[in-house]
Length: 215
Image (cartoon, rainbow, N blue to C red; front, side, top):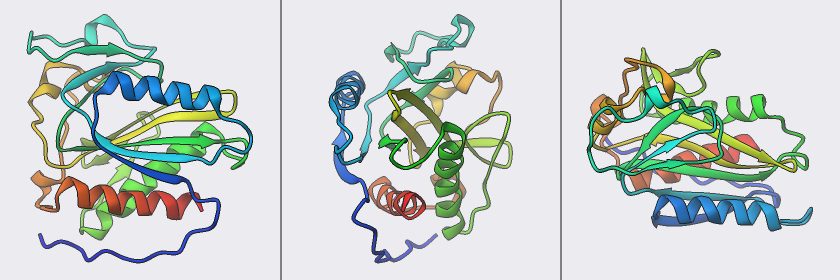
């Protein structure tokens, strides 16, 4: 499938600061999100961090032992403070963290989750792929297969963590876990749907959709 030409959009002065972090280790990035959120004031601009992670499993605060990797594949497991169960991050997956003052934006968790899902759905629609969210299991799905995972942490009216979108990665590590706590959940990625854009291009386009929705 051919690449879609980039678009030019104008955003309001309140648009978040975009930080492109390349490939970044998970735990230092998580700690930096915590520190940013703890230190921010009512005047601190919101930020969106765009990156990829080296291979890592992250286990949310509701994580259960039965969802941990069933095989010793050498991939570290990091217990973290977002909601949800276990997921996998690795090269070729676009990760976008939203560090937002939800009170300032008059947002609550459920509408923000729906907005993140809609940004991914709109992105995939541009590529001719139909996708949808599920009320019982946050994320974005193509058919029955999950293509994007979501998770947030709220602290003093501000959020961090965000979403991950499978673009062009090795999906094998997902097979060693119950993705997001669902045994047998199928996962997919954009490359397997015939979309050949590089993760960096996808990340740019997805960021634009998030900015449009958050405007």
